[in-house]
Picture 1 (tube, rainbow, N blue to C red):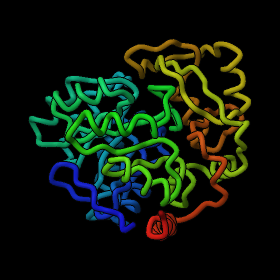
Picture 2 (picture 1 turned 30 degrees about the vertical axis):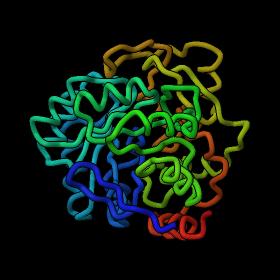
Picture 3 (picture 1 turned 90 degrees about the vertical axis):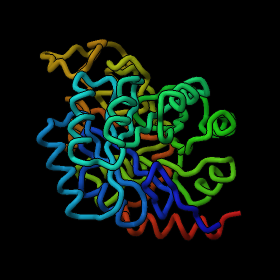
Picture 4 (picture 1 turned 180 degrees about the horizontal axis):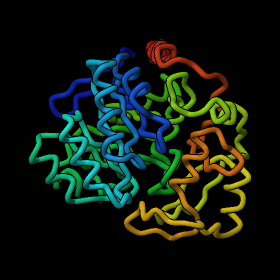
Length: 314
């Protein structure tokens, strides 16, 4: 199958692939711009960034591509509104928001004309999003990495949600191959979002030690922990996540980064440690199928592989 274009508002991606916004700082300007240059949609992971850092990353991405650049931000972040407004002031192409749901963000988008794309995991929330003014939705299943909103497979969710809404639907969770993309398009999705494959890319801002850890992961290493955000989260078993599975690891200091925090551990600091290569005391978020990835590829190689697989798919 020749992959169709993906239209979100006035923006048209030549290839219907959205690169997942992976925090903290795994997906920054370099990765987002590389994806945009290949015809997809690149996302900067804004969670954990200051306003100045976000401005820098958006401007850097703009200097590297004329393609579509968005941000991904956790609704659970205390500075959610400030981050969204900062991105909008920089002329960001779209806002993708997950780990919670905000009605206010649709107003911000309407005022500026910025497409708002919530991450949802149910028919009910898909309908609410459309009614409030979402330009598109990302439908995320249990296979996804990071925070999870459902225990249902994305392959179960897409048909029902496609029937329930008219806006573009983007499938997320467990998408690794061109055949996967074709499968979802045949189900009615307009495109896909991919995280794990781009986390394990040359342009990913993950430290080499973290990328090596991805490649060494095995299916039995993938676990679900309870995040301070109040949602389950899929991760690779590390010494730190093993401790979290046994019970709380209370933070020694709190940066007040979340609107509401369970304080069972500091998620921002744990994710930063992993991004910097500390896989002993870091939290390594990952998709369910990360163990199927055997090689670190460039974004160009990933797109070439995916489009070739899609062309050969049934």
